[in-house]
Amino acid sequence: MLRNFADTAALQSLDAAHHVHSFADPKALAQKGARIITQGKGCYVWDNEGNRLLDGMAGLWCVAVGYGRQELSDIAARQMTELAYYNNHFGTSTPQMIELAEKIARLTPDGLDHILFANSGSEANDTIVRLVRRYWMLQGKPTRQTFIGRDLGYHGSTLCAVSLGGMSHMHGMAPEMLPGFAHIMHPHHYLLGDGLTREEFGLKAARALEEKILELGPDNVAAFIGEPLQGAGGVIDPPSTYWPEIQRICRRYDILLVADEVICGFGRTGEWFGSQLYGIQPDLMPMAKGLSSGYLPIAAVAVGAKVFDVLNEGGLLAHGFTYSGHPVACAVASANIDIIANEGLVDRVREDVGPYFHQSLRQLADSHPLVGEVRGVGLVAALHLVRDRAPKTFFAPEQQAAIHCRETLWDNGLIARAVGQAIVLSPPLVITRAEIDEMVDKLKAGLDATAAAFVI
Image (cartoon, rainbow, N blue to C red; front, side):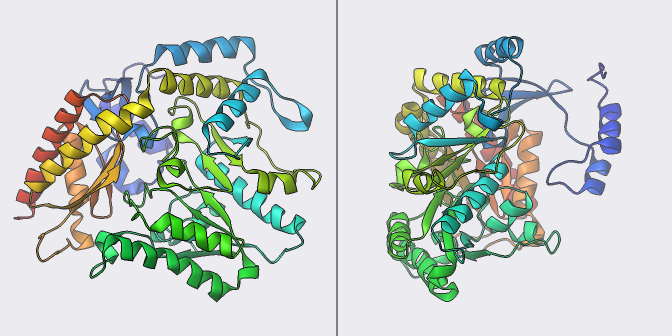
């Protein structure tokens, strides 16, 4: 076992020799060397050399209650001692599975009362595809196979989830798009809505769904899937007219509506779920990340009565995973939900730190020539970088201005994410106003350094 965490070169060498990273160029990373994270507490993590970093991304959108929560560690240890594992196949359950399923059903929008467990957002969305296609087969409409998603939609990285999503760089990794998936425009007014008000553009973007349904033929379309707010696509906060029109179209053509809450769920937007913020009434809802604050892998799918009542009469549901409803993960997730509820974190995001976060970012943006737009809700935001605000002039993709800014921020103690030409932030829900001030100070320094590098 490795003990000398201070030997960065040795750790990086072993990492390059044996560990294949997610979403990385293996050769380039081996030359550069991985960053080694060894500790976390609250909103901060430390690397192996003792440098403290404010985690502006809550790990990967997920560490809602912050790092180092002893109560979650204690719950995991106790559950591992009592029952480290059992499955939910063939008619078995555990108290932890039952308790968590009931708790999720109470929190989700009305009618989403039936919960299936998985281990990641990708698995949850694979589950969605199987359930929806099974539903239509049982309805005697087997041609309803096609899912419609959105450009820049992200629903995971398994083959099925990649096909659901609209990330061109993921589609281009290999000729791996499965049949039965289509995509429409995303609702980003700043990028695509010139000449239209936000409300006009919201209707235009939503009506692209109707155009696609008619192109494919309504009898061939199974469902529309979308994140309430597109996270990994760059924090695309839709206009107020968008989701009501999407829902109208889905109901008109009897298309199932799937709200992907993997990022938005469990308080991130200032409501328990993004669907509640945007007034979405989904037929199915995948969730993960904030469900356990990332402390253990777990995901879930909430299924509404319209779909479940049909599946319930369809005999064997031949789907599931070895670790579906893992008792330790369920126990930790249940305790995590209790922390969010007992500490009032959802209300805190909506009424206190969320508004302060966006107010602080907008004040920074108003005074900085590199920021063309600040967008987002709750504790998720993006700063869109531009070469010039007026006329609106973007950096060329090959300049990688956002990546330059991200690396500068990291070197100065702030973890953020570069998505396209935007800097994205999604800090833990427990972040304080003082920590937001620290974040903004570090952001300003990083933006200044980036502007100087590109002679803005």
